[in-house]
Length: 343
Ligand code: PBG
Image 1 (tube, helix red, strand yellow):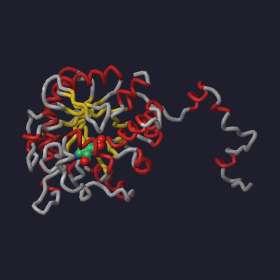
Image 2 (cartoon, protein in one colour):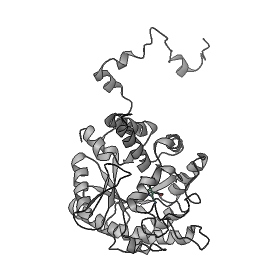
Image 3 (cartoon, rainbow, N blue to C red):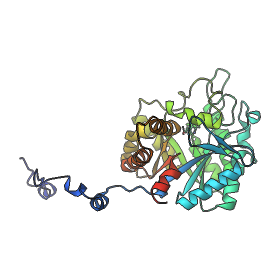
Image 4 (spheres, protein in one colour):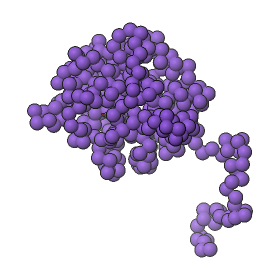
């Protein structure tokens, strides 16, 4: 075997072969597997996405997301308490805006008394120790289901949309949001939101940018949950990323970091773990992944079909995100996983 003798690192690393090398030795017992685990998953790695409904005492199950419901604000507060008790540090909020309040320009997003802002305040009043992450994008508020303002020809306008998103972020920050998460993929919006937050005295409010968000087929159950699926005209390919691209994800992340993002997100999750690895290799920043609604639905469908076992699938997929280098994961299985992890 060739050896580079003047390389001390190489000389110090002899590679044994079988039978001196038996990789199964360290796997033979539970205690030893625990001792040798390279990655740990805890409830503190999880962010729990929650859907908000209008009303009081309301729970609306979402058929395409079996096991997930929309909750009225009182129920959202109860879920936040549950998160706290399970050791989940943060919840992510998404409103199902009543149809009568949806408009072409999504102006309900700017209403300080909208469903989202009421839910933020209610959580911060009763369970302030749980972090609240809020989605910035117009799709739960528009009649066309797009994340931004649409031109007469159907193009989603970048700069005009970004101005509205700034206003949306401001009302969320005023209501008490801890992390502003723009999920819209407009260019330049992170910088504009950051300066508006600084100008408004919200120095401590974080920005988690949906930096590498792909135009994905895995979002359909989410669109049911926020009520935009039937409304959506066309697709989101002129603003969300092409699944063919990986180099471009690094540029997206670089741009959002340069504009002041505190952390970045890759979305969807499992089909894009290569993107997580690339981003982690390029930047020393916290990277989160969103295990999205279609991924959750796939696991639940596999369980319902008898093709897999829920607890094993949930823990294995979440561990995969940690192994790839994620700081944390947004997942609809957060509460279930935290229970399994003894949270
Ligand atoms: C909208 C938004 C989407 C998701 C989060 N924010 C859907 C979309 O872009 O159409 C998807 C989350 C999921 O599927 O769980 N801005």
